[in-house]
Image (cartoon, rainbow, N blue to C red; front, side, top):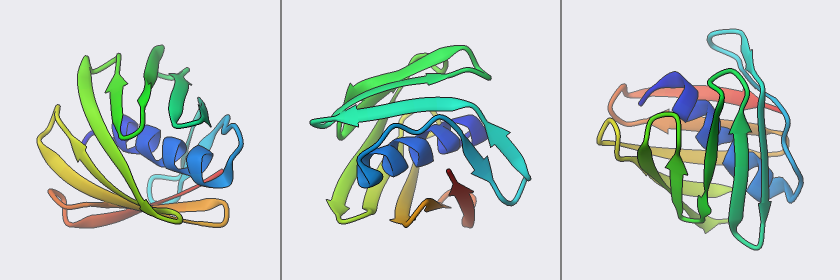
Length: 117
């Protein structure tokens, strides 16, 4: 899974779980902040990645990353827990949101990535 797609999935999960718009996510491992603006209303995702100059849109669980021209599945399972699949890289991932932090597990890389708002 590409790093910017992973950050976008984290931002969507955070916006959905917290019930508010997200304007930036910070990845701890790479010590990088990504300017991604995302809001989720009634399951409809409206997002823009300012670093990649592209939209992330759709209705949960079916999203589309316009920069990659690829579909992304982000399925809410229960409060703050999501299952996902990135069609571009054919990789599964999961997201767990706790407070203002999201932990993304990328199954292909067998690694966790932590994000905060």
